[in-house]
Length: 172
Ligand SMILES: CC(C)(COP(=O)(O)OP(=O)(O)OC[C@H]1O[C@@H](n2cnc3c(N)ncnc32)[C@H](O)[C@@H]1OP(=O)(O)O)[C@@H](O)C(=O)NCCC(=O)NCCS
Image 1 (spheres, rainbow, N blue to C red):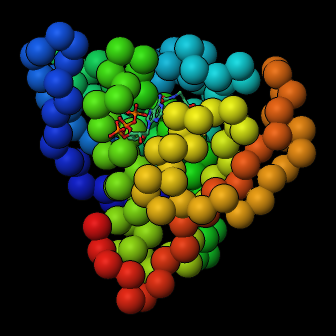
Image 2 (cartoon, rainbow, N blue to C red; image 1 turned 180 degrees about the vertical axis):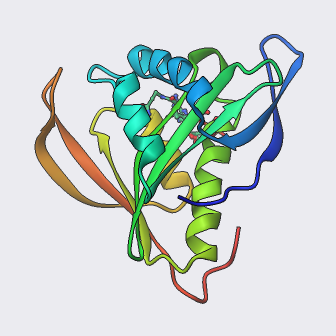
């Protein structure tokens, strides 16, 4: 959908050596690794077929953090409808968490929203997913609602979180 310029970054790998990565749009070669991370993270994961559909969708995009060796460290997916942005998913490989990567992925969509005049970015998150809820609230997403029993495996409420954009808002 959108032309995201690849962004360079690095996270300090455990124990000490930094891992460099680029943020790039998803491509076919990365789909199998993304599906692996989906299975590791979610009880109802996106399949390779669903990711392929996402790749071919005109109003969705998935950005991926990859190393020089093409290892996928994390990814995030966004669908835009008119001036509304829906964050479908965001995940970081377990061993690379808490190093700022989730935030870097989120910032790409926040900058995109600001640059393209979106009214808001919104998403659903499991009630008990405190890591993700904390990530989003740290970037100015507010809890705006709850969908009862929205998720399966296990059944759980979804919390709706939205970040609204106003013209006067400071750019990231
Ligand atoms: C949610 C997720 C993407 C966060 O990725 P990450 O790379 O670890 O996030 P960051 O390192 O950028 O964290 C940014 C902030 O989010 C919050 N945060 C992240 N993980 C947290 C945790 N486990 N507990 C509490 N706060 C957490 C913190 O405020 C953190 O800032 P800090 O490290 O300076 O305290 C990651 O935990 C993940 O992949 N989880 C599994 C998939 C998932 O649940 N996705 C969300 C679907 S809605």
